[in-house]
Image 1 (cartoon, rainbow, N blue to C red):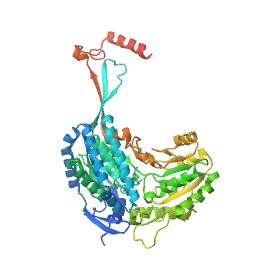
Image 2: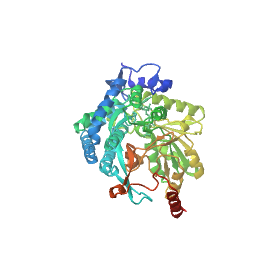
Image 3: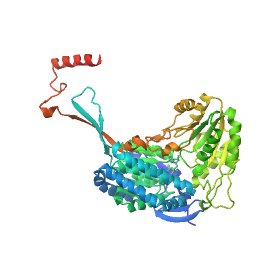
Image 4: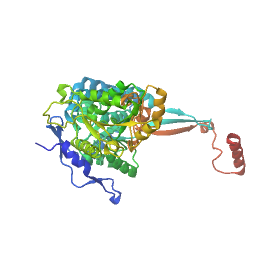
Length: 526
Ligand code: NAD
C-alpha cells in the first residue's frame, strides 16, 4: 500500500526549518519533498489518487500565467466580475453532489459537514457578488479645511494573490479567499493542503465549466515547500494563508521581510461561557455540535466550556445524555460524526488526553460507533476535572473532545476564557442579554456569538479573523473584501483649472505668508 499524504505530511509538517542565510526567504528542509502526493480516504484508508508535487519552477509558471490574465481581469467592470462569481455559484449548486463526494472522500467528513461547506461558500459568493461592486466603488471622503478640493478612495486590485489553505474545510477555506481576491480584481494562485488537494482541483474544474478564464485561477499541488515557493515568489503581491499558528508565523516573517501584504487566519482554543440563567437545553445542543461536528476539526470549534457552578451538575447530566447517543461512522450510514482527516492530528489529540489524564482529568467516552472501522476514527470525548495548566486547556486540540470547567462569577469566567494565547471565536450563553453583551465585550476574540455557536462565520456582512496568536487581518464583510485591495487615497484640486498657480504654503516662504498662516491657525484651532 502506498504511504499516504495524510501519513507522510505529518512528518513534513514538523520538519520545515527556516534559514536566514543571506536574508533568504526560503524554508529549508532536512530532506526534499516526495515527488507525489498519495491522497487517501481517511475513513477507509484506501488510495484515492496520486498527484504531482509542484516544484518552484511550476509555481513560478502558475504565477506568470496568473499575471498574464491580470490586466484583462482587473480592467473588467466590477459588475462583470460579480457576474462571473454568480455563474460560479450556480455551477457549484448544479455540481453540488460531485463536490460533496470529493470533499467527503478525502476528509472522511459526514455528508452534512460536506454540505455545510457548499452552503457556506454559496452564501459568501452571493454576498461578495451582490455587494462587491458597491463596496469597491470610489468612496468620497471629507477634505476637512480644504473646502476647495475633493477627496476619495479608489480600491485598486493588488495583482496576483497567493492563497494557501488547510485540510479541515478544503472548499470554504480555499474558495473564500479566491472569491474575495477575484471580486477585487486580482488573479489567484492556490496551494491547497497536501491532505485534501482534490477539492481544489474539482473547484478549478467547476470554475472552468462556469466559464471562468483558465489563468484567472491557478492551482498548484504540493507540500509545505510548494506553499513556501508561492510565498517567496516575487510574482505574488499578497498572501492569504489559513492554517496553523506555527506555519503562519513563518509565513508572516517572510512576508514581513519582503514587505508583502499578508492575511493570517490561524488556530483557536474557543471558549463557551454558560451562565446559570442560560437556556441550558439549547446550550447543551450548541455545545455538542460546536465541539464534535466535523470531528472537532474546525478552527472555531468549542474546545473549552465554562459553566457557572450553580448549574454545573445539571449541565453535565444533560450533556452526558446527549453526547452518549452521537452516531459515528462511514458517510453512507449518515452518522453525525465522521472520521478524523489527518493522522498527525489524531496524535496531537492523544498527547493532550494523556497529559490531562496524568494530571488528574476525567475522560468520558461518548458516541456510538460500529466496530472494525479501518479509518482515523476517534470517539467524541468529554474531559472534566481539568486545570488551566493542562495542554488540553492551552493548546489547540482540533479533535472531537471538549474540556469542561466550573466558574464562580463573571470575572472568573472572563479570566478563564481569556487565559490562552489564542483569540479566534467564543460564545456567551445567558437569557440576560445585557449581561451576555457585557461579558462578550471583555473576551479577547475576533468574533463572539451570544446564545449561538459558530454562526458568525456564515454571516457574510461580518468580518472574520483572529486576535492574539489566532491571526492578523480579516476576511469577509466590507473589511475582508477591501483587504484584497490597495486603498488608494486621491485628492483633486481644481484651482489650477481656474488659473490659480500656487498654494499659500508653497515657495517662496515670506514673513507675510507666515503671519497669515499663524493667524489662520489661531482662528481655526486655538
Ligand atoms: P498547516 O499550517 O500545517 O498547513 C496549512 C497549509 O500551509 C498547507 O497547505 C500546507 O501545505 C502549507 N504549508 C506548510 N508549511 C508551509 C510553509 N513553510 N510555507 C508555506 N506554506 C506551508 O495547517 P493545517 O494542519 O493544514 O490546518 C490546521 C490549522 O489551520 C489549525 O491550526 C486550524 O485552527 C487552522 N485553521 C484556521 C482557520 C481560520 O480561519 N482561522 C480556519 C481553518 C483552519
